[in-house]
Image (cartoon, rainbow, N blue to C red; front, top):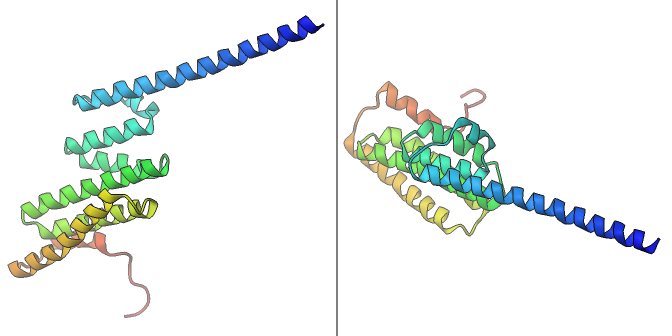
Amino acid sequence: MRKSLELKIALLALAVSTIAGILEWQELRRIELAGEQVRSLLSGTDISPDDRVRAAPEVRLARAVYLAGKDRHEEALDAYGYLVDQGDTRFRVTALFDLGNLHLRRALTHVEQNEINRALPLVELAKDAYKKALRLDPNHWDSKYNLEVAMRLLPEMDRIRREDGEEENDEEEGALWTTVPGFPRGLP
């Protein structure tokens, strides 16, 4: 009877260690696959749609960075929009910081082309992303720094716009509506 109990315990321990080994192997395989996908993105090759669906959040973040680097801004915005609500706090802060950087780079591109009215809403979106990142992690130095840059850039753009004295056309005026927080309610 005692040998039977020892045998059962030994078999149970063997089964538990086998299951733990299988789970560890699966985790290692997932990490290896994620590494391959990130290396593919770093080499300039996009990953397949099937791989995107099953990809780890870190791979999706790497893909969003890849898309932004290829000037595929709309796709990058979609990817970041999904990622800012995924993962732990550190991951979300990283996604929000990268999203803010995407908006700020696009705003600076418009500033270089002297399209100040198109740059203003993008600066506001960048500031919003940095502020959200700082709400999650008040000590995230990079977000603090870039928020400061965006805040200093905005008054400068207003000054340039006033100095140019340019008249806003309908297309430029429509671009400013993204900064309006909502529609006014009630009577004037």
